[in-house]
Image 1 (tube, protein in one colour):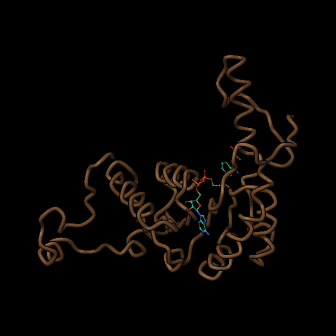
Image 2 (cartoon, rainbow, N blue to C red):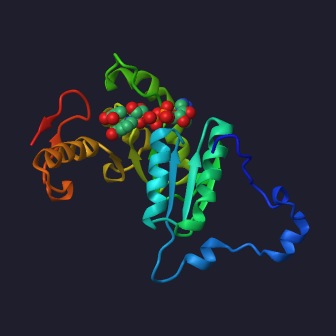
Image 3 (tube, rainbow, N blue to C red):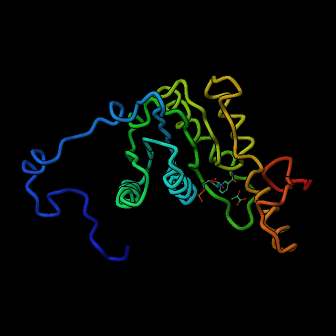
Length: 220
Ligand SMILES: NC(=O)C1=CN([C@@H]2O[C@H](COP(=O)(O)OP(=O)(O)OC[C@H]3O[C@@H](n4cnc5c(N)ncnc54)[C@H](O)[C@@H]3O)[C@@H](O)[C@H]2O)C=CC1
Ligand SMILES: CC(=O)C(=O)O
């Protein structure tokens, strides 16, 4: 977006706030979208780093949610990311997008995705991230559970398999409500490489990487 100023309100567009209120009436999402044929789905993503934003953009293009809550720790970054997503909604299925540091916005989520925490430095393994990211999870998981006690928890942060187990323990949820992204990315990479080598579509390749999402994977 370069140096372009971002517009976040009617006042920025030169429209008086009171006039705006009289012209535009707030639509209550639950009232409009809770129909017998379409349930209301809310997803939370913690935090809006590279992975969190890639997930947010993918979700928005899939028409699978009515509400997306983004938890951010860096105010300028999450405000900017939220505005970029909101400003794209004219081209996307209708979704209410919020971002905040306050976990109140995550209340009643169906799915909470955790992608917060450090990434590896060049000479580190994913397992080296454990202590740092464990401390972050201790602060995140109880807040998500408090606000959305019936949700599914999906862990992406590394070391993902260890942190998925820790999330299960921290949450007190039954095991079928805590999942990790596991080796999905590795299997997708494997399928791409095979497809590239064989010059076929990756969707026509069935192949899996199994084991831990780390340095001990096995190809099937
Ligand atoms: N499972 C998988 O297949 C993959 C996992 N990853 C992992 O995902 C994680 C995130 O990666 P990136 O998005 O690339 O990193 P990033 O550095 O772009 O984003 C991490 C985010 O976590 C936030 N954060 C730091 N401390 C926090 C706290 N206490 N509470 C909430 N948020 C906090 C940062 O502000 C930042 O926005 C890393 O652990 C990385 O290794 C990345 C790619 C694939
Ligand atoms: C970061 C990571 O886990 C990956 O790209 O496989």
